Length: 139
Image (cartoon, rainbow, N blue to C red; front, side, top):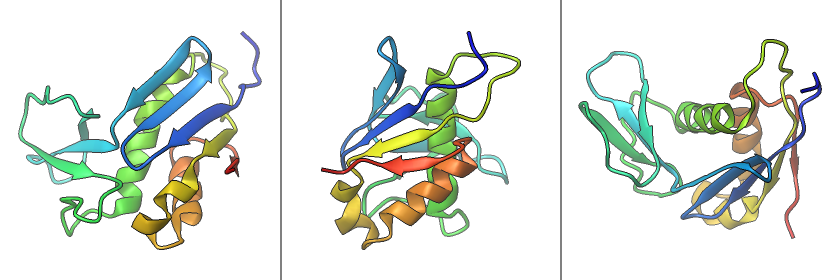
């Protein structure tokens, strides 16, 4: 394992998010985040479309206009927590791991949801989640 991280690929659609680092390291989930409802600071309880939540939580649909987002929590924070969890899932653990570059595909599919600000929002969320750089590959 080298010190230089390979790029992380983030593929987006309004109904799915796929994050991969290498062919054998990937995760594909619905853009849904469950936040703790019983703590003053938001904490991730679960992600995706699996209802395996074992504690009181708030379900946030990240790519929906009716997201269920509490007024005290920003969409940027939710996206950051979501991507931080996904990146940590696909990146190999290591003491000397560098912040990886991220390549985003499919950001245009979110234009109707984020009114043209999807790139700025994704850049900030992914950098806050641990990305060194964020590049876009939209067809």
